[in-house]
Image (tube, rainbow, N blue to C red; front, side):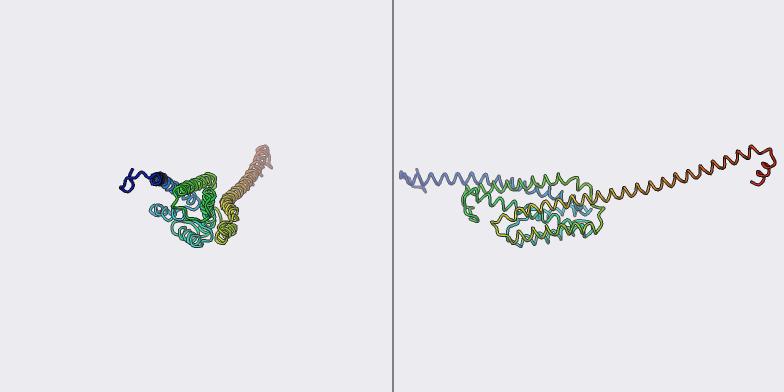
Length: 309
């Protein structure tokens, strides 16, 4: 046996070499698995981007220019995969600014509709991305037994488990938005073009509390605190609830409009019926008069009546 070009029969050296070979083989296996996991993560992220993009423009339509529609995917992909950490203001702020600029540039509609889209999807996006990252990190450190925050990138086993957990969180996020899109599909199809500015402002006021809650709780809460989890879940529920509220208001407005149209039609037909009755009454009276005149046509009074007519 040779190590570094020298032959040796020392058992300690042989054991050291075996350990080195095992570590190298293990690192090579981990590297191959990690590269495959990275490819899978890349696919999951892009599928998630297109799923979330479809949900987004189903609520707020894009501009009609085809080039703008294609270009809209690029900045949206950066917003969709934005990483959210606890006590970190930069990404929270830039994501908000990016959303505002994005809806102004790439979407059509009134300003109040664009504001509603930001107030609805910003808390949901921040909450889901934060829960995905934070819960994955906590589960990794719990599973590996490492102290929270320790850099384990040099350990092949922990690197592999970290990659697998990260890929699973990406899969859970994708499945969540697929389910959300399927659930909200019928509410998007109903459209939201019938809302007035006052109705949009009411929805904005409701979402403002969820928006501020998510922003402040993630920025101010300590990293190891689980208090942010139920608040993030509530923010997601509130976002979907407001989408349903938009649908409900639209349907109520359509129902009220149909009821008003039916009431107008009812009044119109009632007036037509009354007109028909009056005409029939006049025809009936005229027919009776003509019959009387016909019966008295040979008499003097009848002749005078005919001449008077």
